[in-house]
Image (cartoon, rainbow, N blue to C red):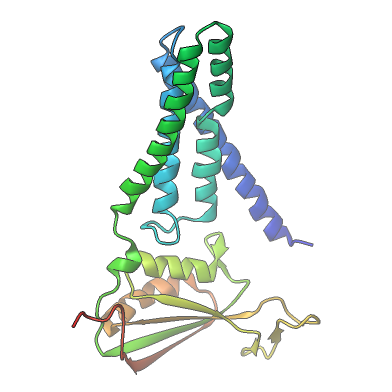
Length: 255
């Protein structure tokens, strides 16, 4: 059974989708009114579906695994499922196509179908290409850090949260936003802290709060600048610093 916190987060996700649908539907209505040309070729619906395809292509690429923006799941659902789902309208397209055929405007209906499919695909591609022009953060961060660097290790629990999301996710997202060299989250099958309470992933586990380790390696200056931010995010846990020697980082230089 899901915990109350998990059920609340699921309910909030549905709320984000619903809010996006309301905003998208209202936007479609207003755009349709502004572009309504009366009987004949339905330019308004064609424009709406094409721009919706452009938006979802752009946002999906921008927030994808290799994208520039690290978006939270609820934000992606708000835009892609909620807004784009409410803004675009395949049902209106189908009804308008049927009415064109029923009114004897067969060639107009066929042209509408062809133009719609082509515009949808071209718009998604255009959105993807536009977002691809923004260099991914991972690509920007393949700089050479000093050979003598600092390893920052953060020991927390899986159930720790900050600002309504898992603490490990908040730390990694903040580190990425500040252009730190990289962060890795490791999940431990067993461990205990100062309370001596055993945390294990076995079936008869005594705790579901499994230990997590976040490791960040960067220059000493960057790590020291990140520590005050980290201090404001953590209410408990353990942080260690260790000087390390970096043998290789990023792509090998050509030649």
